[in-house]
Image (cartoon, rainbow, N blue to C red; front, side, top):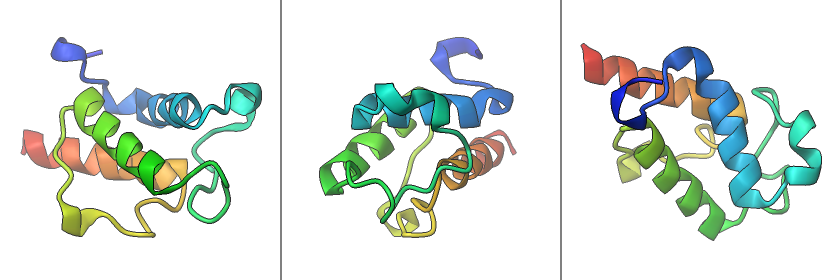
Length: 95
């Protein structure tokens, strides 16, 4: 981890998966949740409130800001798409 609790990019997919498991209450399926796990339209536990909670937690945990216009079905397609987005946001912040 970096200072301030910000996660390094090599751990991003694992951290995003853990965050999704925790917020959606998927602990019994945690071992099967990884970067390839499809989200929007595939997990009935993922509703509008949990989307907001996931995005808010991503901002806090990874030290990023997610603008409303960045939120899309493509972003929420999978754990991997969320992790890639976080990595891109962190890379842009460092540039």
